[in-house]
Figure 1 (tube, rainbow, N blue to C red):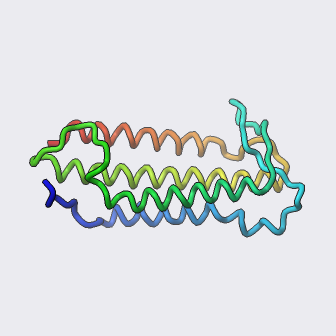
Figure 2 (figure 1 turned 60 degrees about the vertical axis):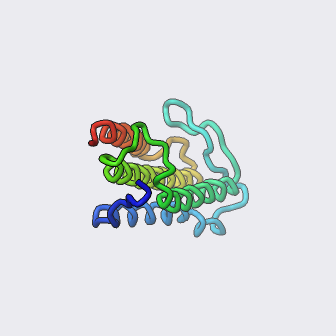
Figure 3 (figure 1 turned 120 degrees about the horizontal axis):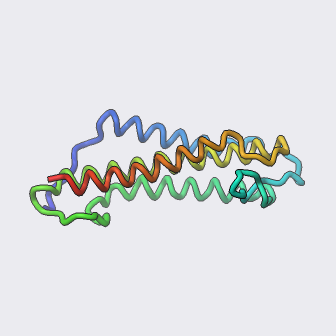
Length: 165
């Protein structure tokens, strides 16, 4: 089983990778507005159940969010190379190794995609709220959808692993 290596990236894989990278880049957009903001501008750092900001922080909070997004992107990208060390919910044998490894890598890519899109949404909505003074998160349904897609893809890929032969 040590010689089992999943196929090279498909077009679908490249599309996921490109969108994930663009999501990471979009997370960094607020940096370009940093000098245009006053030093007294505050960013929402916590929301209540109605989607209204109820906790505020200074503008350096944005850098922490961006650094976390970049670190997650790098980690999720390079960890794909160690697909044999992932924790799989099924026993790996000679018959299912290739399909399980492929599903595991696809799961990692989908997680990266949705996490990067969530970070891009958060950083840009924080910027909007800081500059506009609005306390409601704009288009909050987007965050809900992305979180649902993230959780749904994890469940879907776990089911695919269970049924893979």
